[in-house]
Length: 146
Image 1 (cartoon, rainbow, N blue to C red):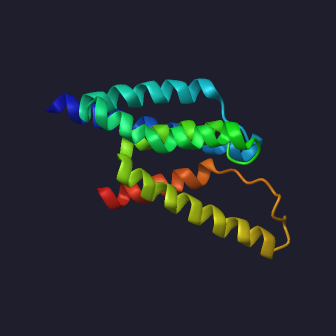
Image 2: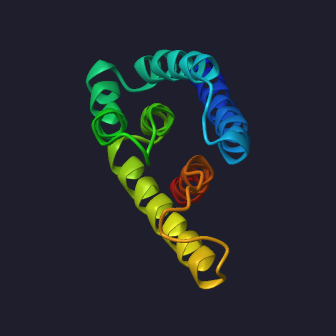
């Protein structure tokens, strides 16, 4: 029991740390480094396997995999890093909470984009970092779950 509590704390700290790092990097460069995300994903998979089992981990990866595939086929816009981050948060939250988290992420980013356009700071082609909104969606959903 104590081991699972320790794993849960490590998992939450890992997710918040990678979301913070990736958010800063995405805002600054509109890219996220694959290596830290890959390390965090490995930690999340291990924690997910210990806490929830293989089938739940695979199911939780689905939204992230779909975003990843979308990034490869669509080109510009949503990136592969967004898909990898969604895999990490998906394992941490579970499939249902991840979908709600992504919903919050899309709503918040849409509101931000509309503000940019309304304030004439950009137009519909202006690129905005999505990871900070994924972080916000994760934190909102995590607060609701707790």
